[in-house]
Image (cartoon, rainbow, N blue to C red; front, side):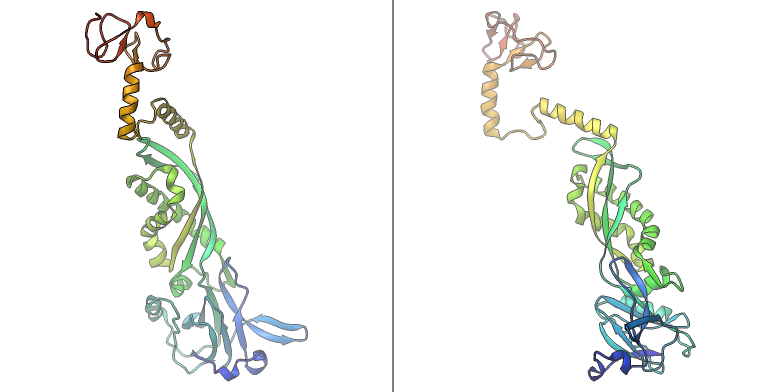
Length: 346
């Protein structure tokens, strides 16, 4: 039992009348991963559709773009096709295996699961969606641990967004994921099965990016890097066992728990007070500011060197200039000895 390509002369607008059975896929949108083939019946009010139970010799199957058709006999796969077009069913023909743009691994899967017996009394047609399946939502219930080198601290983050997948080995997907006797499989079935695995892999990907020195606040802009990390985590679970792979991920928002947010605010406030020591000015600017600071610096009683009107440590006001003296090193002091070089007041 197998399929052969239909001749061009037989392709017309009245196929349902010319062929014993004209089989097409049932509804298939971005939320449908698999659906059964249905028979087109010419009625008084237009075409009607019914479920296929048996397929007569010489019947026709129409395959649309980005679809893979699976022909089953007695519940076993006997042929498949991933090339769009029109095909005839011949019970005496050998499997054709029109692979389309799929990899050679699909033929290997077919050789493992094919059925080699005689045609039975029950034949069925299934169609799988080969398009990128988008809009699968995810969200972290518990905060993910993330060490941020910029803050030199362990942060805890939450994130949510969407990801997309594609069926790369539809025969393996059909065998391992699709329930038997199901009329269709929606993305909800896959999401329920794979979400926990996706979140576990996301934790591993986040940990790897932390080791690579990526800031937590930059994760939203690193979607392609996250996909690469996730695929390395999910290949064994998804690609090798279920025939699917991750295509893209979009992170909608990244939030911190209360302790992490408080820590970030403290570090940012201290960085502003200390004039952002992480990003020092250019050498020319450093020399210029140094000369200005030497002329305006003064020593507080607490021992700190300051440049404004108040001490940055204890808050004391700058002393009256009449009680100050300038050392030969350039520092302004109020005591009897210079707080920088130790020279006695003259």
